[in-house]
Image 1 (cartoon, rainbow over the protein chains, first blue to last red):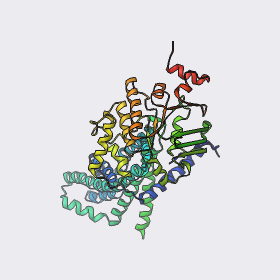
Image 2 (image 1 turned 135 degrees about the vertical axis):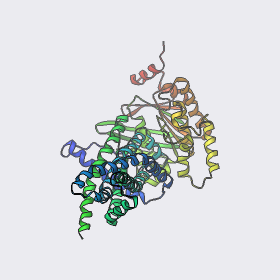
Image 3 (image 1 turned 45 degrees about the vertical axis):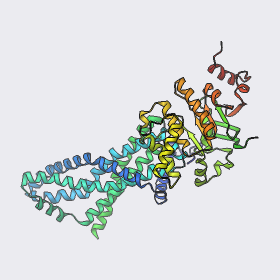
Image 4 (image 1 turned 30 degrees about the vertical axis):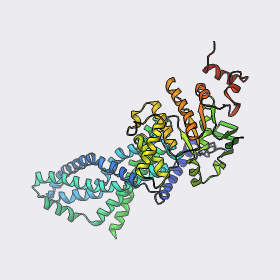
Length: 265
Length: 250
């Protein structure tokens, strides 16, 4: 797209103007994504490639983190429950906490750090080395190839990673419960599935879709609008992580309100 | 008289308070090599970026192959872009792709129904033409600066462009590689019958490759003509100092 020169005088102050024009830019970026995602040509091969990069290459980190979260959370909860003689409720407590909040949140925060920064840095460096311009002058739509594919990949892969994290965290928890309370695997998972509902799982998956979209779109937006050489690339990667994390917490809060409202019906 | 392929009239472009182009007029004729010279920051690259629609002028006309670039819809602009090859200053090869993938990228997206064999043949032919037949599976990070430039040129040639735009083709290269690149520019013109604009501040490159020179000073072309007409006896001090710096005479 041709860039317009910006020689307008600021309406309020430069900082406030910059904030609002930034918001408008981001809104237009999201709108452009929704427009381009449905229009051919479709870059299926690149979507699959990105899904592999985002999903499979994040597995080791996600596995380790999920497992540790399960063990630590179980260990930290035990003293409080044992005061009431309710350690048998540990599987229920852990499952609700992991499926409803910790699984999606931990996965999304780790993905924001790992995937968001890498998307921001990769697209940012392509921008400053004119690779995006090179795509554009060869009559290829760089937005479709770089942005649409990555956002779709994060949106599809984060929910899958979240379900995987839930499972790994529960396994970590089981290991801890089993070594302390001698609870068998079947009893542990019987209690787990008795405590969680379909609404918990669906809200977790829907929330993860939102987190995935946020991580992808913020990383791409920051990379696509980076400037000022390598310094700008670093800044793009950094702000992609910070803004994604901030938005993930806001979304968590909003989704929680909606799900709680549904639960009361 | 040769056919005009590019016609620029009264072209203006500013970035905020910085007025880069201030009423540029220029004609480019079929199968000629035009060299645009000027100091850094004078708007040479801006001019060719407007030509391919990467930037939009504030005022004036940029007519390429009979079409006003600023008036074109995305589809028409992309059709025009297929006829223009743009060789970037830093080559702009896609880091994450091999040389083969770099060259396939524009081809498979713009020409449908090509078989794998046809694609490979076309890539090999062009790599041969730029003198790098054995680099097909290499990554850009494994290539030297001169090799990257050559692959960049090969990638733009894969779509058979009518016009080639070279942005600082010899910047950052050693003198011998510069001569190789200059020869390549001339070979491309002869072999593929392209019309070219070469953006540079290297007078050796200009002398070797250009049929005509156009010197961009203060947002306008101060002198246009053959190398001999523009440089050795230039009256404009700024043009003369340009010549003196590049060809120090005792």
